[in-house]
Length: 235
Image 1 (cartoon, helix red, strand yellow):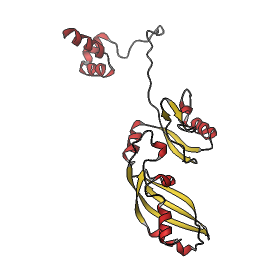
Image 2 (spheres, helix red, strand yellow):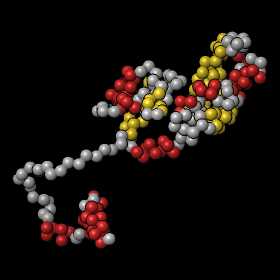
Image 3 (cartoon, helix red, strand yellow):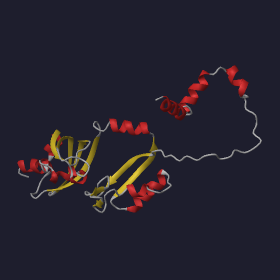
Image 4 (cartoon, one colour):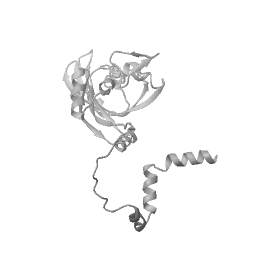
């Protein structure tokens, strides 16, 4: 036991924190007896004694647009094999490259027409933690082009603008099923607004709770909520 304790002390005595604490306890007079302050000018160059390699995480934040419904954010690996051609599209671009945020942005945007990124910047670990903490409070906005089988007038869709806090029962999207359990989660569409185009088309704007996937509504148990609302109005 004594030997193990001695070995542990030998391994930790020269950590940075241990040295700082030791220096704080040494009186200035005692320190100056052994080391000059300021130190004497060196007459020879330093010689390399040892090399230790380490790594540190780099956190990159930014904004992106995704133009492909089937594009997962992370690689989809099943039985050791990557499935879906576009899964984990961004991850390989980071491996083995020396880059700045501007170079990374250009590289990603040139690599595929399925995504576009902008405003990439290196951020601290604390900034990433704050982003995670606010995930449940965040909202997202979507715009959809809607086609109706029956002819419509602008007043036929005006009622949609008054719908607030519509609750959806959303199944786990297929594209993230490899890393999340299959479940039904409630998500909220806070507001909706419409812009009439012609007798068969209008734009639908949505402001939703983070994690809502209106573009994948066909996979959900309450499929196509807007379609159901329009059918109830015989539109």
